[in-house]
Image (cartoon, rainbow, N blue to C red; front, side, top):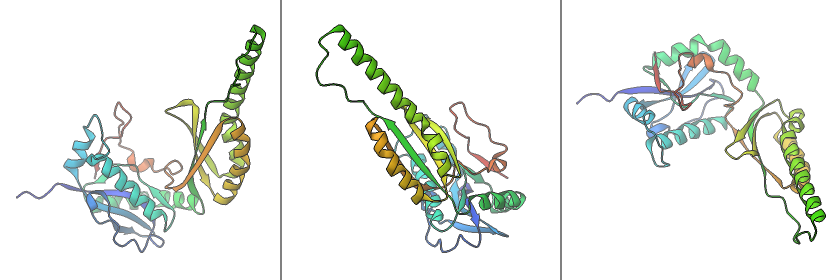
Length: 258
């Protein structure tokens, strides 16, 4: 029987001194996750089926129970579990190497850059703020005259503009409270905004949001803060993916790095 075609999946990189006590951590296909130590760095790796990864890449649609969806959840689980122990640099999904020595080579080659990124993250964590504009309340009674209707219409438009302005002022209001932030529109378009925050003091941020939320509720804007998350939006590990080529739909192809 032929040996299974395996690669080595890299989930994240952290400090070898900090990433300890990760016993019984399972990754994709419940494979055990091991520490691969290269001087001051530790990479979290597990064996992975290369045919399964390649087959998943060809799928046009992905269900919640598909191999790919399960693999993505496993990737996130490993990163979140490791984050409880220390700051780490999460790798993008599909970072796979042919041999363990290939992982060692890449960590050694980019050791100084990775250590600098870890130092930049030290003491901070990533959080996500989602702000949504909901329907504004309208007067219960319809205006009885043309003038009244016009005034009502103008008031509604003004309220809507005020709501949109406050929604998109959020990054400006939040910037003094965080180390860095990244703003992205959501599938809902202009009615929703997602802001990724690199935060040194989460409690200070929560307190500020509590004060701001009362003002936003008057404008029918709701905010939700979640985290901490692995700092995908604030780490620069492009050097590890310098040969990647994006597909037409924006996904990164699965490549075995050597």
